[in-house]
Image (tube, rainbow, N blue to C red):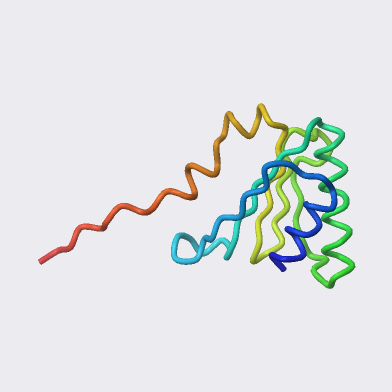
Amino acid sequence: MLKIVLDTLDGSKAEDVVAIDLKGKTSIGDHMVVASGRSQRHVGAVADHLIKKLKDEGYGRARVEGLPQGDWVLIDAGDVIVHLFRPEVREFYNLEKMWSADRPMERMVV
């Protein structure tokens, strides 16, 4: 599914696409993909294209939030979670930094 998402984002001219491996960090999914669109209209078009492609490929149960506004669209396809932003909104939330950071070592109890 990750390859489908990345290929579709590339074909839709999404910008600054980053894939983050979530394995071992959380149980919400295996991968998070963060990408930007140039405008609200571009973010909406990229999201629409990705939702259609996922459905066509048999992953039609994706949950979508934020599509009408176009500032930040979340597409939760299960194993892959996609965040599409306008550049200013992406910079403000900076999800890549939060999710790419290594977890601190847990204290061992002796």
